[in-house]
Length: 133
Image (cartoon, rainbow, N blue to C red):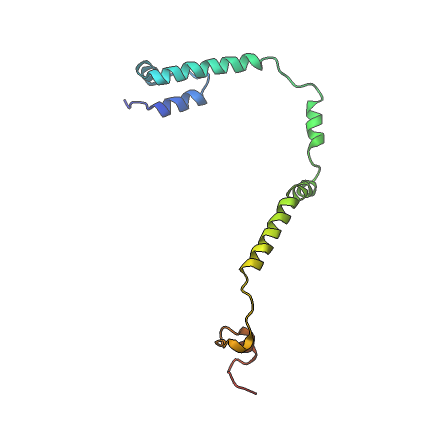
């Protein structure tokens, strides 16, 4: 029989709160003090949570209040999201504009620069053969 690892046991204990433990789980709990403490603490936490929320039920109008607060249409939800993200979108746009202005090289004087045909795209498109007219 395969020996159960601590992670596997803890996963089973966490997922199946009320399930009966099989013999391999019991054997592991007998041998592993850390998992035994984990199982005890998990059981105590579950009991405390059950006791704390035992008689908690929403009132009769809870359902209707939740449904009333839901958006009526997808466009309404989209509008809400657009308004919420508008400041972040504007800030991002301003940062991108600033970055573009900082990264754009400044123009140089045309007399000092000789451009290769592929660098001067406008001249290359207008006069693809390089013929002067």
